[in-house]
Image 1 (spheres, rainbow, N blue to C red):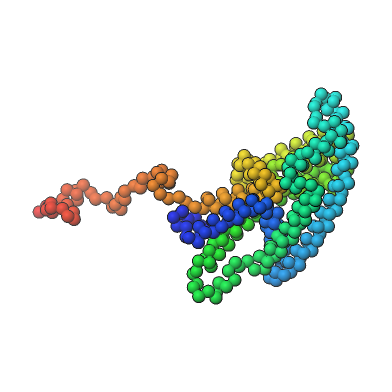
Image 2: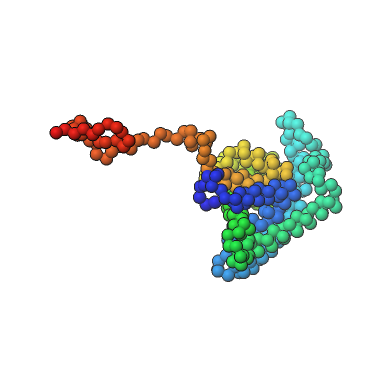
Length: 376
């Protein structure tokens, strides 16, 4: 719906569309299909940004080139991260332990082996449904196939977004299927707009955070710059918790140089995040306007149901539900609008009659038995 409407004015087809998208969201959470859904949304967003001509196939070919570039970049980033993080841990952990002993702090690990065991136990608790390495490989392959399917679906929607392909051939023009398909299309269009709103804000915030972090990395000549910049941008796409992950990695890499640099990095991150609060309040406040506790609750539920993709998708769903629900007005005896509506003043005559006119004549009243009196 593009305009405000009342609950009683919803057509049967509109009600069907709302039930359809509600069931779709529940099925996505139940079957853990957040990855293909995000692939469709991200791919369609990129396709719309690459459309520079009326020929949509040009955007599709450019999209293929972008996908190849992203795949190469992610592969290079993954290799760098796999080689870097163990070295960072081996160098930083002894310094962290020495600093903790000097300060009297208690840590849940004493060396790299105990930290790795702690992390493995945590990963097993969070990913117990994978089981073993074979199931993990199977799950990774499934997610990769989901990504490919999502890209193909996004391309097909970009080329032709109509749901009812035989709209002009039906014997009954305003049939239930065609009208329901139109309403379902409106619901998914609204869901996509919520995705653009939320992810647009997150991308802007992540870009600002990555730019400031890159300046710090270049100024202090921090090692493993590729890993730091990549982790900062990717983690920045996760609301709230993304900064915690990237900050931990940055401080850990700083410990490989010296504890003083690690403290300086921590102080810098605190300062820039305090500065970002003003930007975030402007960006998030103008676009999303959801309380922080509601966002955190959505992130927790999204992670429990669908993992990291669920954390990305949760703010989108919250924003969509808020937007759709705010367009439906409840009108009735029990609605707040009817109970608090101001009293309508009685209409006043444009020209007030003089007292002499009122006493000199009386207008007859319909249905009244009183005679009309006139002054002679």
